[in-house]
Image 1 (cartoon, helix red, strand yellow):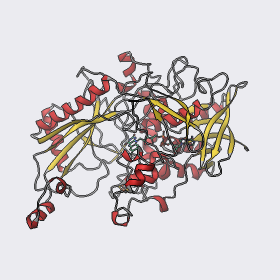
Image 2 (cartoon, helix red, strand yellow; image 1 turned 180 degrees about the horizontal axis):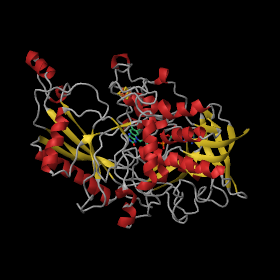
Image 3 (tube, rainbow, N blue to C red; image 1 turned 90 degrees about the vertical axis):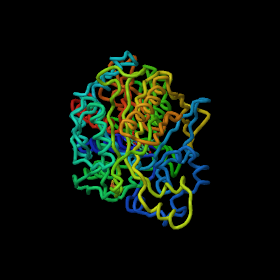
Length: 562
Ligand SMILES: Cc1cc2nc3c(=O)[nH]c(=O)nc-3n(C[C@H](O)[C@H](O)[C@H](O)COP(=O)(O)OP(=O)(O)OC[C@H]3O[C@@H](n4cnc5c(N)ncnc54)[C@H](O)[C@@H]3O)c2cc1C
Ligand code: SF4
């Protein structure tokens, strides 16, 4: 079956990047078809952030038998609990394979809004420390852009999304256009002030920079600190496609959003050397449908967009469409984490921490910033929080009687936790390919993922434990518990790099505007485009690159070049 309409644009996926592409293209007047594999989400029905544990069938503990059978991989993610497991895929319907001894945890959401519903909202700009890193270290290829190219687009997306945070003036972590910051609690302020003195300003603690509104903004309400954002947000106080970009696209009257539309592949006309449209399997009827458009934006996430292109092979592109470089699917990166430390800290026993601030604190990268430090390249930042121990002490402390009960009602001591996120180097040997033997619930070949950490990532993780413990010791911390856990790639949920940008079509898939070198009317604006991984959360950069690519594509269309 073929839909005879020729759209101006097709956007594949409606998560963070698809939502932005939909908004930008429709606001510029393009008749845009957004194809989303998953179901529609109705906030009034599906958001569950205000449902208390006692109203849940398993009192918030989750149906462990069902999770083990249906979501054994997804349920390893902290956010996939009894409330929000419905926003994560069924691992049975969405299989993938890995090389023996090289696990990869692929955490996904398939619904309108994608992972923008469950994301952690931490939003940081990248800097030239990141955009120049490959060139400086002689690793992989150079980014074709610098901070100055993307800075106006950070301004642009931040102005719409609303990012709260504190300006610091640090070169390695440029300031955003901030809404007022959330407040640090007194334990965190103690850590901030003590470390500032002890490390002569090298180690700065700030409130997390988050896509959460601290004041009413563009028709969306300020956050009321209810806490569990990964379950949705009926006041639309955090940025998601559902809360912000898709309603803006809808308002233009130019968007057609089609859920249940699993894009199988992109069709290509070898004569005109253009993508002509996409082939879709309707997940409800299981019928094949084709859609046509002048320009196609793949925003299905770094691995899913590549899977679509690998499934779109032609005679000329036998290893996947737009893959004359041979780099499609390669250079897969994720952030290395699970290194840090936790300790009791000596402060404010007379102060109680109250409220459910949906944000932690952040320490920007300090390794290899000004001077070479450590036996590794690049660096890491720390997320963290200061907190008083509460009821959870009962699990480790035993006792009985009135005194024991009273002690549990008394706030516990202050603790502080540093949790690192480190940069992963791009390597050709970390890659995905099609596994034709393993198909998903719609019969589409899925991915085999080959990915492992190098010595550099493992050294970063060990250093996270060492430097975190060192800082907690400097604070006078006790019961210091450093950790450097063995955790496979994928679990930072920042997968990227599989269709990298570059200046040379021989070594990259996309040009500096996310446009495929080989197929000019094809754009990939999700994490696939990244050339290195920085150590900060990537989604804000995906948003800025998407808005920039849409602007470029529309300009090219107007000039008749597309
Ligand atoms: C628990 C959690 C916490 C996170 N915290 C942060 C954070 O604090 N900061 C940060 O920067 N990032 C964070 N992330 C990562 C962030 O969610 C992703 O980087 C971001 O969502 C990627 O955007 P995307 O548009 O590429 O993909 P997604 O948001 O995943 O959207 C992809 C969409 O494409 C659809 N799709 C896939 N395949 C097809 C197909 N074949 N046909 C049609 N549609 C398809 C999917 O259904 C989905 O809706 C977090 C993620 C999770 C899960
Ligand atoms: S953003 Fe604020 S109001 Fe919305 S779910 Fe999170 S804590 Fe609640």
